[in-house]
Amino acid sequence: MSPITRQFRDFLVSLRLTVVLLTLSIVLIFWATLAQVKLGIWGVQEKFFHTFFVLETIPGTGIPVPVFPGGYFLGGLLLLNLVAAHVYRFRLEWKKAGIQLTHLGLILLLVGELLTSLLQVESNLRLDEGATQHYSESYRINELAILDTTNPDYNEVVAIPEAVLAGGGVIQHPRLPFQVRIRDYYPNASLQMRDQVPGAAPALATAGIGPRVAVLPLPPTYKQDERNAPAANIEFTGPEGPLGTWLVSPLLGMPQKFDYAGRTWEITLRFRRYYHPFAVTLLKFTHEKYAGTDIPKNFASRIRLKTDDNRQDREVLIYMNNPLRYAGLTFYQASFEGEHTSILQVVRNPGWVLPYVSCIMMGLGLLVQFGLHLAGFFRQRTAP
Image (cartoon, rainbow, N blue to C red; front, side):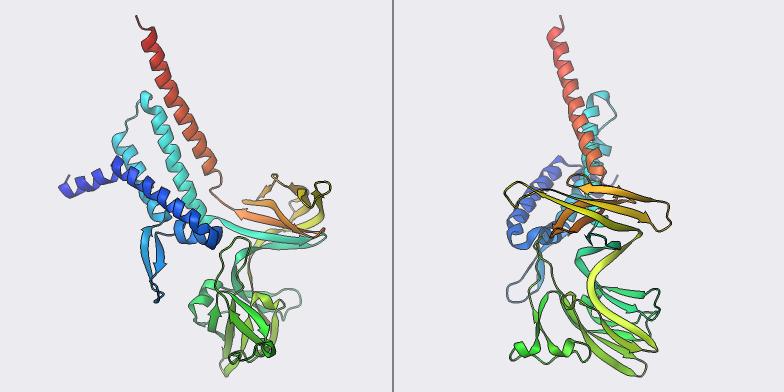
């Protein structure tokens, strides 16, 4: 083994590296906890934990620079440190079984958190009593939906992610007979009628409701109880030239319609939809309060779940701390509006079971290691 390889190995399996990484992790968590007051839980996750480096902008320039290692960097290096130390330092011995089991549990916990951060998808399912829905909607992520509504039996939908809108440029989708050009994009904005905003800048929109609406940019929000309302001016261009520019935003509500190439189109900027191979119908929503107060005591949703292939058609009661697990999804009773509208949180997390398994492994490991030491202590006390 070359000296450089040996130095790298010793660095990777070093207990000193473990202590440094744990110390930096504590600092990162403390910093993120303080920042959560302004950024909220989503902003903290994106800035501190779901990144390799924490970025701060240089005052007066807007240029981001790395100032501290992020969660992916610290967690990934700690995972490599634990695996390398486990492989290189530990031997399969009964007296060290507890330590090995505890380390394996910690490694599994880090892997589970990585899978959760990369693969977990959260959305909401908002239902009025008697309503049926095949999809859930994201709470924060948006998409530009362009629908061909010519056929009365179904709509053909082309969905463009919000990240593509933020990047700007021109999009030519094979299912669209025109190009989509993003003239501008605002991650968060409010809308007002143009005649109510003196001195508003000239409108970029030339079609739909856009020419009558003024866009007022707002700083993005990351608070858990607030949503960003993006806005964008989208220009469509066919072979014969520009077709017009439309202002789109979730605040506009109803889609905007236009005709082109013998077909009827709708355009809307909406929360991203996740379609499912089953339908959910809200049969009854129950909202109980503590007597004499408005404090929720219990709220529950009786739903009907029916798959598209008709193999399943059953009723399920979802209430607080009693979710429905089906097809890799978990449906939680999250909130409600009024007396007849239920809001279910829909979570897809392929690694949801790993934290439970890892905690059991670490608990058993500590119990085994403590038991072995305790048994050895009693043997020494009772030895002649």
